Length: 122
Figure 1: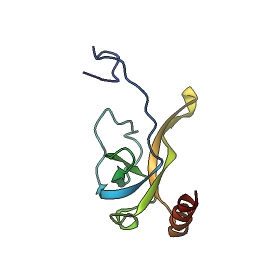
Figure 2: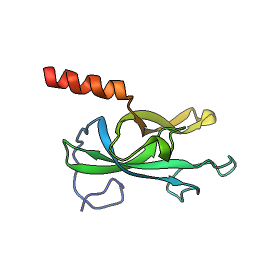
Figure 3: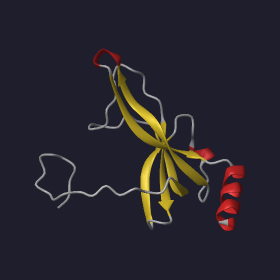
């Protein structure tokens, strides 16, 4: 019923902000080039990537996304805290175009402890 594709006959969608932090629910590595509609240059050698399912407690949902470059499965134990960060999906200098995306990256243990302490005080 709802679809972001302009060709879909679905109804209006509401933008809903989500939490910037969550906990790792699961993760895996992808060792293949994803098929379209994922945008990638077939001339560029492919590098493995990490997919992570993150539980957002406030929203009571799990979202799936790509980990930040350099973050592997061993960096994402189940239950660890991660935060969303901006990323670049593709750059086309000839068209002066940058396609952006978001990634998940681990939050340092110190930051997690400080955030919990700060939340408890407020």
